[in-house]
Length: 229
Image (tube, rainbow, N blue to C red; front, top):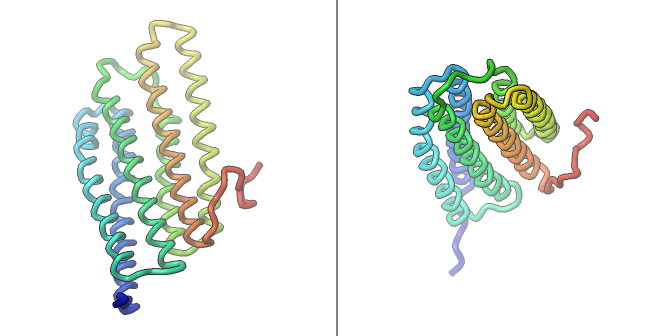
């Protein structure tokens, strides 16, 4: 006997809960990212450790959301935009989980440091702030169904890439001028690289939002006409 799809109102309620749980997870990940960079900036070891400790909660939350999404597919048999919403949510959650992992890597860099920072941090917090905004705005676009907004979020990855290279060049200059600074510059190079990867994952989230809204996959060459050259 064929399985009968659940009533529409139950599907809507399940999708709403899935969205709310994803937004909650996103907020936790944004907090981790902010605190990881803040712990580095202030060399606050307790804050850095709290970021590391929070990762288990993110993993558990991500697993719960994925199980809920699988349950929706099994019980409600969604199609078209409903199915795209579930698929997009599952992929967004995986991207959030990876951002949390990178935040942990940044926090661990703080915990391993036994000397003062080579220089005051300016561009590294800016990279983190842009990435946080990208994640937050992508999910707002998901709720609002704003394709244009998602494209504009995706374009902001160029800002993160530019800051990454700026940091790389600056730290390279420090190392060339004074080789004794190399061991203090290397951790900051890794942190900048971690944040560049966070930007990539935030971009992936924006692309998942575009896929949900349009049903079209975003290619590496796509710019949607919204990015300034």
